[in-house]
Length: 230
Image (cartoon, rainbow, N blue to C red; front, side, top):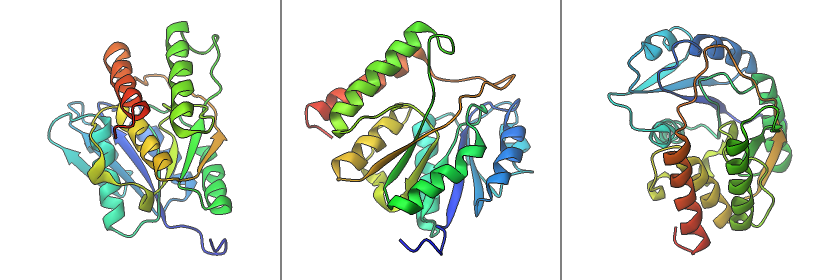
């Protein structure tokens, strides 16, 4: 890759009922100097899209809540069709540090990889035991599927090489879609890089991850790929 020509990249933020945090996330995201900031308002009922419209370059809207994976598919598809090389995804609840954006881009440029995963410094002091256990188990099985150590398979702070994603082959629409995209890239022989990024809890931030339902959905994706079914 020509390191003198930075990739054309966009920040992609899937958002659902994030009115309390979306403004500050977008204001901070601008400091990462993206070519564009795109928000996918996934059927919010609290004015998230209206707040975001004054700070993002583009708002894509779902009329109903379809799930994080569906929001990612909408946003990634738009970026693929409009000539972007890479997309950095981050969550609307403010848990991701935009100060790490240059680190993700630098690793992408240096390695010409297909995916840069952010990974968070989890410990019992920062995360409930059951959530930490589920994260560790999903990392173990994701590492088994990918054939390389995956430190944080559920982190939404990522840089995707857009040409490496086959959106038409995705079968999931919720949080498990991030696991499916990871496995899709691994199965195609894509290179995975990983960058440590801080874990931040913003006042008012709310995760929409449903512990039982979404954990089981991720487990189903893992089992499918372990059994060789995509």
